[in-house]
Length: 447
Image (cartoon, rainbow, N blue to C red; front, side):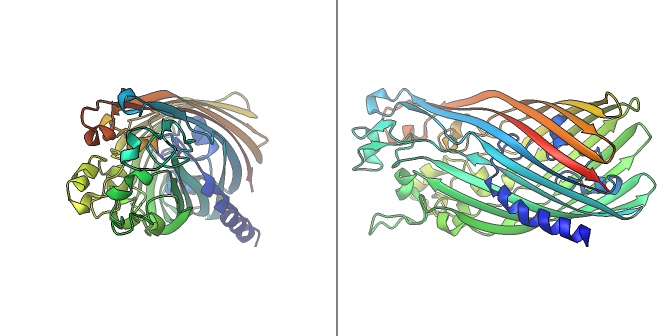
């Protein structure tokens, strides 16, 4: 009864994670669970917490009875600018607001018998989040050719504030089985809920599949408040102790096919489609002594699974030329141009004493955004690549308090403005930048 009560509380409370705003490895977090976050996210071959549903469900067979609850204070700093457009009145720069987010996390594991564990992990993705004020571009500018009659414009020639907000909550019940001594497999069905809104994209109304030329309106492109959808997927994993010193792990998460975001069917390809991409990871851990742990993960995130994320923004030029299928929201509609990425996670852990353990890590991800897609990614500048992390845990063997810190170094992408293709003689350049940091605390109890 106590176990069911804790599970229900975690699942219900997890809904507040819909405000998540990660933007580290693309729009995936650099790690899940504070111990993993302190080690650069390395976790595929490490069994020490109840977050296997987000990392590798097979590790739960070795995690013992425990539950954990924590919160991460996440602070991304994003900016965008356009240069070379002074003759057209289009130069400007802006910094995104909304720089503080509090993101909870939950985990639970219970050993039904020595070789079988059930659990629950609740976690979030996000990071396609920006909130730019308007007014950078004057009314007497080339923006009037895209969106006439406004006294001033935002950086993408729309009305008022500019930005998007994407949040994804994933609830992952887990089942893990030790099929051999020291080896386990695990499975975690994934229930996903997401919500999204966009503002300030009126300049693209005529390049959308839902544009009504008779009225000149587009009801499904922008400024429609939040819309939401849900879907299912699965994560499977393997964990093995090759020796007392060496552990290996592997995990695969399927693409989660989400319902369409109908309020934005004129923005995202496939009439509002926005699935969660598949991803997989391989990991190895090495324990040279009882006090030391070194871990290395390789992760692949397949953004090419999701047309609305992966399709190049340049497809909108084909839309302007008469190919309706490539218009925003079309069957092969223009997207953000994100490429699939490889992620490397390296972590170290050292037990200073029976009470204290310290951690450090490094996380590197390829940049999913190419220079030719910089204009659309003013909305979602997920360009950070290098992260350093620190962490520590205090324990009395039953209770644990863990802290983790992450800093992602400033990075930017510069490329030609998409507006150049619509303005004769224009050679404007745009630059998007981001840096970020986070600090989290987690309480765990073993039972």
